[in-house]
Image (cartoon, rainbow, N blue to C red; front, top):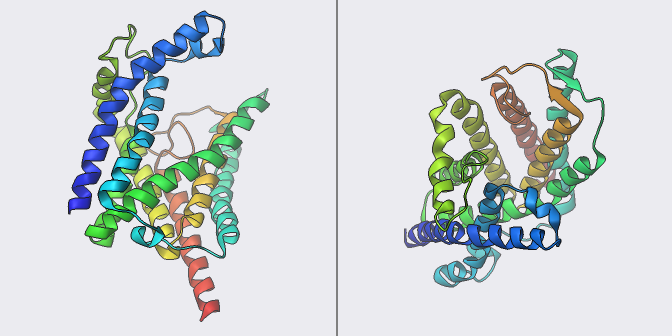
Length: 293
């Protein structure tokens, strides 16, 4: 219970520090752009800097968190070294990417999506970069650190539930662009207040929050089943690559909420595809377990 309280304090401190850092990052970027240095920074909205400020705050406060909960090694987080890490990484990627890409192909055949006339290769390169960096960061943070800490003082299913809910909330809470037209010291707190605006749309909550929660649970199940993060990193990378890549080569013709949202990871149809990935993963884990026996 003490670890859970320390984790709650960590989250509160991260939000507070991030809200205070966001205006500083924004003003610094605008100043550099005005002097002709990194002029592209002038194109980013304040909300972009707010999200980066939260990440910086989370990293800065990790060391005090580690000290307070006395983390010494992987065993303290119910993790261990994985001798088959490359196999788990590749299998996870395929189990996530292939069903989602097949779903995308079906949506193209049904004319719900259509291929773009021009493809921005730089945008595809960014998706590849995100597919590498984001899963490592988020899996280490959510399934590695947060779930590991909660497992020390709580039941497994409760710990997975809380972690999956946090994972979904963090991705779902985004303030609308141009929320702070004039940036002041309180703009970060204004972004926090407006981040809850999406919850006023029940359809978006049903289509987006639920799918992200299930994905979080699947990733946690992969971590618990292997006592390692590599399978969950592979799954996460597969979802980001297939969804992000598909959005860059195709555009939506029909909005069909709650069946399908703004991308391949939002809606009831993606929810079903995620369940298929989960079944493939569980079947493969049973097969691997049977071979070891």
